[in-house]
Image 1 (tube, rainbow, N blue to C red):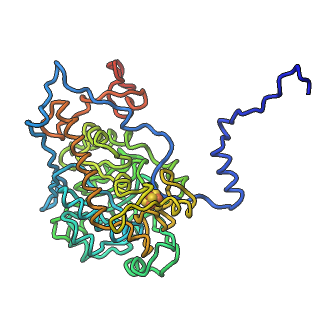
Image 2 (cartoon, rainbow, N blue to C red; image 1 turned 120 degrees about the horizontal axis):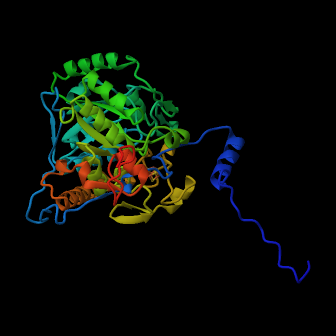
Length: 452
Ligand code: SF4
C-alpha cells in the first residue's frame, strides 16, 4: 500500500430496489421455497389518520368546557330493520378475533372489559365460547365463510350477527390456523381433527353474489325473529361498490376494514400488498351511503389500524358511526410487552420471545401458538400468563383512555356529541391524505381533485 494514498473506502451504499430486507426475502424463498405466514397487520408506512389534524375552536368556533359541559358518546347501531338495535355507551367496539387464535381466557377478558365500558365484542372463526357469551353484555356473532363452529342456537343467543365477506388484512383470502393451535377444545368446536393445519375458506359456501347474500341475510333475520341487527363486513378494496351492494343486500350495519387491519395468520404478501388503507376507505364508504340516501339509516363501522382516541375522532369526523379495534386490543393485553403478570408478580418474557425467533417490540408470531405473553395460544402453560381479570383491567383502561381522548378532541372542536364531528373539523398534512380524506391541505383551501 502506498502510505501517501488514503486507504480504499469500502462501499456502504445499499441498493434501494434490493435492500437488506428484500435480499433476506429472496434468500429465504430460495432456501425454503415457501412464502412467509405471520400475524398482525401491514408494517410498511401507509397514509394514515396521523396525516390529519383537527382545527380546534378559537374565535370562529366556541369550545366546550371539559369538566362541566357534557359530550355525548352514545352510539346506536342497527336502526334500519332490526327490532332490537344495539345501544352502546361509546363508539369504540372490539373486532372479531377467534377462539383458537386467542385463548379462552382472553376471549373472556374481552367480554368483561367491553361490558364494563358499555360496548360490544365480537366472536370470530370457530364459534362462540360459553365464557365469552356469559361475560359479554353485547356480543356480535360472526358468520364466516368457513362456518367453523357456526351454530344457529348460538346465533339466537347473540345480540347482532356479522356476515364476514372479507378482512382488511386479506381481502379475497381465507384465514389459517396452524396445527399447534388446534387443541382438543378448538378441534371439537370446529369439527376438525386435532393438531392438523387448518385453512379457512375465502368465500361463503352457499352464495356467490349480492342477490344470494340478500337471501342469506333474510334467513338470518328469520332465524333471529328480525330482532338482531345484521352487519356485513368487507375488506377495503372496491369500497364504493361493496358498500352499495351490502346496502342492496339488506345490511343494517356495514363494517369496512382497511388494510392496516390485523390477522392471526396470513401470508405476508396478502398483508402488505392487498387492499387499501383505512384512511382511503372511509370517505368512499360514506360517499356510497350518501349517494343511496342511506347515511344515518345504515350505520358504518370503520376498522383497520385504529390505535388512539385521535384515530377514533378522525374516523368519526370523516363519517363513521363507530370504530372497531383488534390489534390495539392485543397490545393493551400485553402483546409485544417484555413482561407478563402471573401469580401477583411480573415475569420477564424475553427468553420466550427468543425461542420463537423474535424479541419484544418485533413479534408477529401469533401463528406459532407460542405467544410469550399468553394471548394467542392454546398451550395450557402459556395461556395461564394472562388471566381474564388482569386482561379485562388493562383493556378497560385502554378503552377508557381512547374515549377520554375522543371527547377531549370533540369538545375542543365545540361539539356536544362526538357524532357531530365533521370533515370540516379536519385538515391534512400531506397531499395524499388530503386527496383520500377529501379535506383541505393544511394552510390552503385546496382539496386535490376538487379545484381551488
Ligand atoms: S406477543 Fe403474542 S399476540 Fe403479540 S404478536 Fe407475539 S404472539 Fe402475537
